Length: 374
Image (cartoon, rainbow, N blue to C red; front, side, top):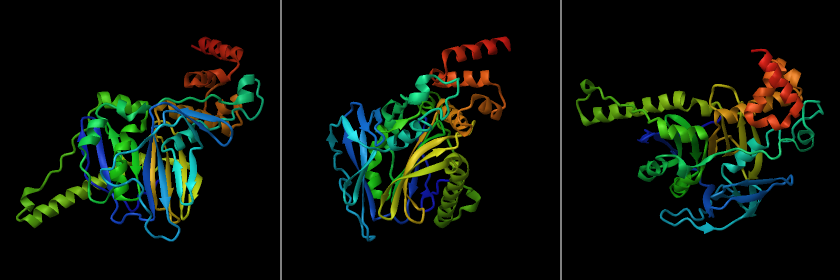
């Protein structure tokens, strides 16, 4: 579960299909700071520790700076109004890499996406007859997933441009068509002011791209009880009550899928008293599934968060891979656990984009069996 303790929800701002919900820290985190390094627009190649490579559009990296004694960390490049620097890069080493004693460069969202792409990447653990030699020898390589850059999401650029910042704002929940697209949290308000423009460079799922085209954000009207207002103090009390009601509704209903999403997480790097983690969801059907990364302190308090909402197709792929791995990639055992037969499971794998892992004669037999069953 993602714990947003220490962050308070403020009233949303809408633009077309986009709803932006500010997150405010009453007390910022001072001994961890973030700033951005902007790269070129060409695809980048990242060499991973297991000798595999990751190729993607990587527009920027974040650099985390921290102190070991709790004193305020220096905020490199986070002054308001300072232009974001550009630095052409084609090849990078690792998703998270130490660049100084107390500075770590990592690739936001790509750290999480790598974890999703690596899910059961090794493929079948036993040489069952249904799997191809390629699947047994090389697993799921190459593994490919699609996403949209923020600049392609209709209305997002304008929404971010007209957004009004709240005092103490350290984060944002971004909805498109009232569907949670992404969460972004940083340690300090100055970090957020500097990193807010990077949201247009982030990656978003297919569902978010489509919702931006077809589903406008609803209008939640805040109704003041005129009979209860006899002074400015009464009006202020009514406004504050509406703010509390909005926050309660948002946290319990609109953001519920995110707050209960992670099923497993992995520590990627230690940053003094902080830990950089990435997480995966349960891949349950008919519910939100978010992948992401976060930095938490020794008490579990959230310092940094960035998430990516998976599409239905991506969630389905994760679900099928999890079920196969649970049953050591045995088609009969997995089909029985799912309450179906081997032919149906094989065709589900093919529709999910994993048909190449199955031998062609086996897949043909599954299709023939399905036609006979109609």
